[in-house]
Amino acid sequence: MRRRVLLIAYHFPPEPAAGALRPSYLAKYLPQSGWDVTVLTRALPEHRSAQYRTIEARTLGERFERSVRGVLDANRSDANPEAVPPLRRLLRWVKSSAFFPDRTAGWIPAAVSRAVLATRAERYDAVLSTAMPASVHVVGYVVAAIARLAWVADYRDPWSGNAYAGWGPVQRALQHALETRLIRRANAITTISPPIAALLGSIHHRHVTVIQNGADPDDWDGLEACVPQRFSLCYTGSMYDGYRTPEMLFEALAALRSAGDPAGDTTVDCYGPNSDHVGELARRYGIENSILQHGTVPRREALAAQRRASDLLIFLNMAESTSHELGSKVFEYAGAGRPIVAFGPAGSVMREYLAQRGLGWFASDVTQAVRALKEAHRRFESGLRTLEVAPGTIFTARDLAAGFAETLEAVTSPASTFSGRQHPAFRQSAR
Image (cartoon, rainbow, N blue to C red):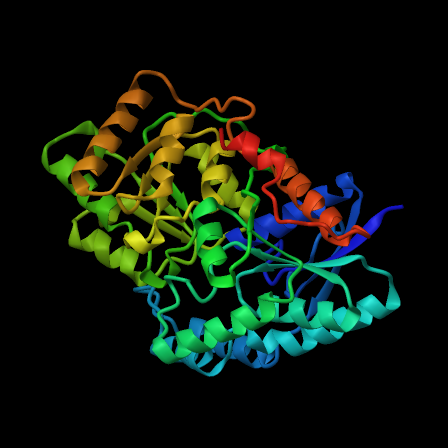
């Protein structure tokens, strides 16, 4: 008999957010392992694909906020389209300060209500919540407790140990207290990498199962497999309100141009909700004419842009405390078949990951960045215009779903002997 899981995910397609990929792959591939999926997610104005069975919950005050944003965008200066109006910054500050545990807390009431109604109308075997935002785990906890279902709490990023949160000691203590109280009820904890698993293990004093992110070859169906004709760089993603920055890249490009090196003769296409910090840095280093910002676009458009570029960019937080970050972007880029130039802290797990798999170059200072760009340009000029990724080199979306299917089966078995062991698919990919 097939089993059913209620997947709780705040981010879900067609939202072009990196956090939407992991739940979308679960919704797509878990049925192949005998688990039918219903996704509880936030309501969007865009039409959702009939490919997935979804339940949408509205956020309190969402319509008001959307109308305010519409007014702010309408008043934004055409001379500086990337500038963030002060009122929008104030809106962000109010949400981050007044809402607990995070700015999406207004989604919790409707999400819990819709989920409980769903569990009463149909039989479910488990709840799986994938965060961040942390509000997703609040919903998972409440629904699992009311419906008396097994609960898997999945972390794409840390919660109280999140380096991007910017909390003071009181807020951090409150977040830690809520997190430990809620997650104590979870039947299993999963996350994307061993470093985050170690952090979560130290917080919750229990084993955490690692199930890596992955790439889905189907994402590229229908997109032209073009061969780039010029050396060009592309970034698709967020700068996370300045926590990630292209400054090292821009400084390296400026140095290359000053030296007359052909590797500096390139353009950088940026797709995503990038802040005015990007334009400011480009002007500071005198390369603003080569930095093209396209804003947030549908994911298919972003994927097509990756295929048009010769090399793809990853920017990580430069703080050593974020060295555990790997994320999902590296998998998507590998699927695009383009070399990667990544920038991050010296101890980043990304450095070893790229080197072991031959996916590209990593830089933690300007000297390394200049060298990486030279090598990328030299590779391109030698005629190597694409990147062939051998099967088994990276984790796939099917591997991801298989890992979760094993975990779900373990926590819902009559014997309930789940011990949080690391599933075979990850052990194989880690070799």
